Length: 147
Picture 1 (tube, one colour):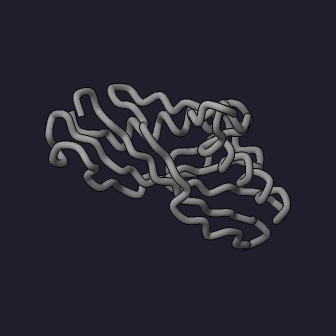
Picture 2: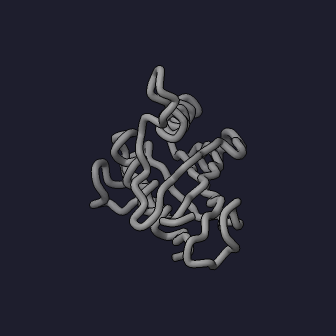
């Protein structure tokens, strides 16, 4: 089975909500009834940015792996608030278990396994109409069974 970008994004969304304790929308701001905090600021928005073939079998092969790119935009009402939330997002992705090197927060993808992750790019803070946004891009290496 090839890597499903949607499945990876849903797994990342669940991890971010769990670790940051704030709502995370998928391609849009979270709805008012989104768990755990609805559309109350700060929150994050997750975007799929596509994927490229990894180091396993050819892309589309039944046992393919891929490098999946995701963007997380933290949204807040002040520069400090959005920077703090971005720090939590970065830590959610990159924190490791002391002494073992394993990532602290699992990303549980249905039918696949995240074998590596990295901060790909950080664009920092922008402001428009009194809403601050901090943009971060992450790259996940995802492997499917057999690759």
